[in-house]
Image 1: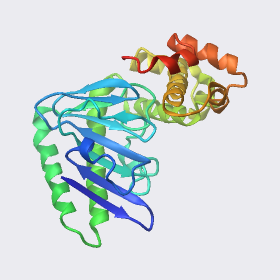
Image 2: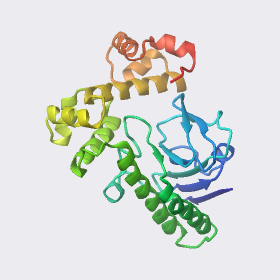
Image 3: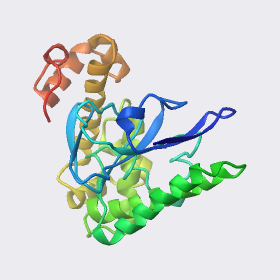
Length: 282
């Protein structure tokens, strides 16, 4: 089963499939998409995100963006997916409505894997059926209806993510700071490497950020910034044809040797070694 809504005038796409591995390259727009993956099977499903093998358990959801490299080669069962691009629904523009940016999408930390609680399975299954029905009802307002349903899906998932992925000690204001920090790092990591840079953008002190992340998880803000930079370096080495020197300059390093030292410190491999050894198990 594969459905899609595509507006050629503006290039918008919203798609829905119960087997993303089978339909992955069959949509009108195959780049720049954000994806919500949902394991509706009774068995765990394997997939790779940035070469890291992920085991998605039954009734778990995983969100990914166009910045990540996803492979379904290890996926042995049908995997449900919702796909949309910026032209259909802009996460950034609508963040005040759904508060998902930096938690579900464009976060700099662990992949957001959400478990659907038993008491909410019916809600998700009903929403799945409503999506099916709407795709079978083509009319002038179908795009608006699908956008409303997508917004509902994002809000429900964001609520679960806040419950499951963020410690209870944080209040809403603190959660917003975490979200905004994540998005800012994802936006500026090539040019801003200091915690103070982001503290200024958030109108907070570096100490306030450090204390907040000490509550949130075991990673310091500085570690998050450096890990985001290293992740992009690994993506460019593995998935582009760019040479080490080009990658160094693209990531804001004035000296390729400095980039090599940074990469070795973060991964235990030189860029050349990492390029030659192939995929590394997470």
